[in-house]
Image (cartoon, rainbow, N blue to C red; front, side, top):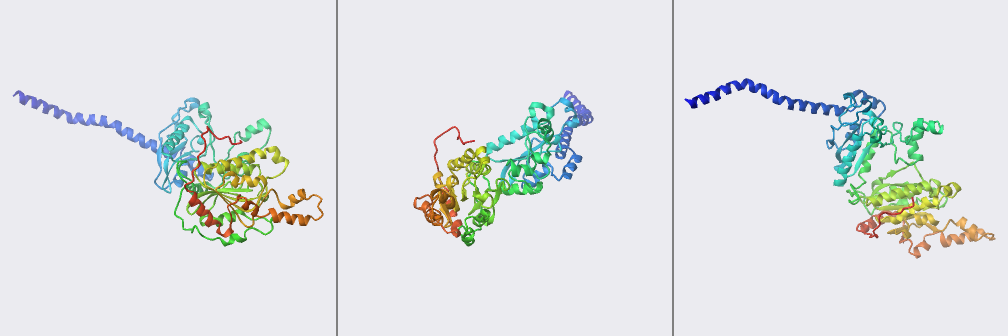
Length: 502
């Protein structure tokens, strides 16, 4: 009986519980449901950034949003976002109000793939506080940089920011920017500050626009018509680079025969030594499938630099441009070339140099600007580089500029000269005016000088060039040399860092 009572009591309790259980379950489950709703609400808010009105304003300016840029740049479906729920921590100037809190703050971060290769990315969101950099914003970027360093992957930054977030003071003292035609600007101080300090009237475009930084200052490497054009070019550029400095230069399948002859090169250099030609034509003829991704094409145009492939292998191209200032080296071209050479050396990319240089550009502006110091940067960069280095002298190689352009004296691995090459201290006319000053028969003296020095033989007999080759076989010889040099190793004494003449 007692047992029955106990069961009945248990049953009684069970009869009471159904109603109570329903209430209890609703109470216990209400919290997870609320959390899930909050998660989804936060996600939706993060995807909208600063809201639909600001997105439309961004589109009216001809610009994509941060997320649209990521979607266009990365392989479809490959983007994995991080820190979507991070918010700024500023409480001053009304920033603590809910209307001023945006999930993810003013930057979208994460990782994805470009043509199947891993890349980390951050994209500043101009719809949220003008993309201004807050402490949280900086924290998100630093986190993916640390992650990229851990796995040996590159980081791409898509900058669209007004600079530091003023409301956060010193916590936000950082800023980045990118250059796109007519839609963004980069400067240390804006036009208003310039006006107040120096009384100069200058527009944003004049002070820090795309044309300014791609043609005059050299701060930006390329400018594009719009976001889509820029991101498509970025995808192409990314394919030339290794994922880190621990990886070799990328190699892809090549359908352009490595031993392909290029007969048009036999006539590309004019018979008249003073007549210009386009060095880019030579580059296009030699590289795989005529694909050449030029870097800084509108700055210091007397030297060309960029990336191409030889038999599928990424290479860096450096060349004098006879069409501009006869290919003379000056301050800007020396710095441009040195920066590119050091980049290639840092990331294991072989260097191919095409030489047609009559010397350094003379004049007081160059001397006062420090041409000796800046020219030494290019010399130092080539001398320091340990990647495979192949040099082709197409025509003029005069004076100190000859030495600077990856000559055998700077440890060039393979140095070729075309039959049109002239390797000498200076041009025949200038040399004759010095050597045979006051000579009665100047023409005969000039002919004698040309016979002795204005040809590739003096350098060849001294071993300063490895061979004199027909231009048409240039591609075949370079591809063969790169295959040989793929195992090149150079051991240098340990040092804290190099002392390039800055």
